[in-house]
Image (tube, rainbow, N blue to C red; front, top):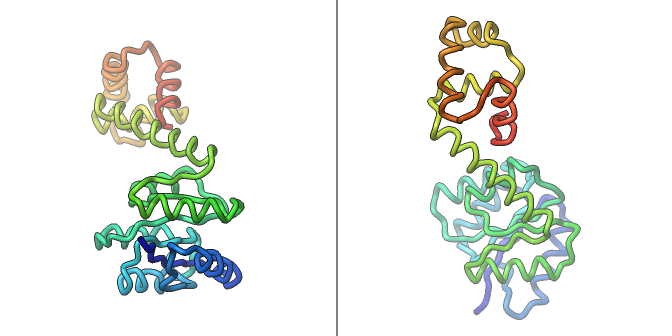
Length: 212
């Protein structure tokens, strides 16, 4: 099976290297190369390639926004992100929006080709222990936040976050436009639901469960 590929990066020399890389692979066909996110989206819509190799930081439309458009339009193209670095929040967002793989630019070219083949075959490909570990931690933290939120009301989550940030009851009451007595009522309810004892324990809980 021939893998039809679109590559997108705003650095011409990287595009040249990617073109040379994939043209040297018998099972790969480069159908378009793009220097910005708008052109990349148009290429994906026009050619409907099997895989888009996408730089995260692109002019006119960055890689995350492009992923969002592809996701919204339910285009079948799989995406491998190519980046120098990616923070936890953007990594999780890329994962949510359907990115199937990620390769650091410092990685050996063979890893990118391998990733493209895996993704074209319907697999996930998050190369590198650091990336896989970061993704795991981000997903675990999100699950912990969801678990905490499922036990607490939205107002209780607000109060918990404010306690974790170091605010006292009077400050919380002022910010939420409620009485200190109501804050104490919420805290009592939170302590019971989370089965913890006191403010310090709540601060630790919030930190451990990504509510800070």
